[in-house]
Image (cartoon, rainbow, N blue to C red; front, side, top):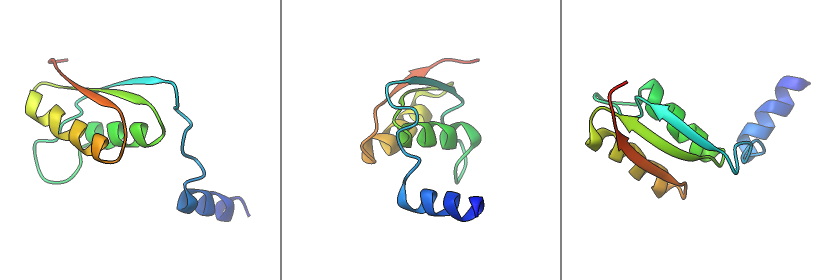
Length: 84
C-alpha cells in the first residue's frame, strides 16, 4: 500500500515543494562527461523541490550549464566557481 502511494505521489508531483524557502549549496554541480553526475543531479532535484541552488564547480562553464537547466525548468540557481 505504501509503495503505491509513493509511486502515485511521484507521478503526480505530490512531493514537490519540500525545500521551498531553503537555499542549497551543491558542490560538484557541473558534469564533465555525458549524462548527469551526482552533483548536477542533486542540484536539479533540489531545485525541483523548490530550493534556490548555488551551483559550485571548479569550472564556471560546467556550473553555468547546470544553472541553465534549472532555470529552463523555472527554478532559481546561480553559478559559483570554486575548488573544494
